[in-house]
Amino acid sequence: MRKGELASLTVADVELSDDAPAVTLRGVHAKNGKRSTIPLRPDVASRVRD
Image (tube, rainbow, N blue to C red; front, top):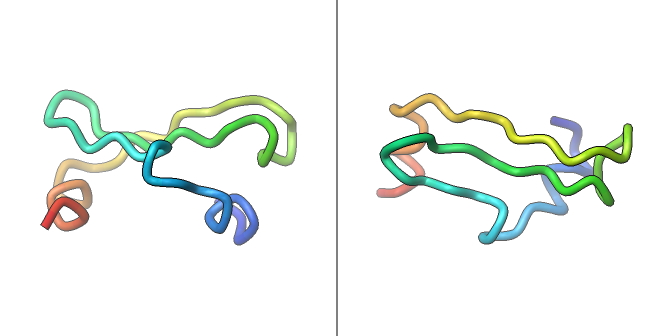
């Protein structure tokens, strides 16, 4: 992710469920203009949850 994309994230863009933790980048903020979902490793999601 680029700095601007990271800066545009909100709490609603982060899903920390046990099934499929991920960050969703809205197309408005992406360089290519398309929405994308970036999976998070379970250990990273666990650290963010804590």
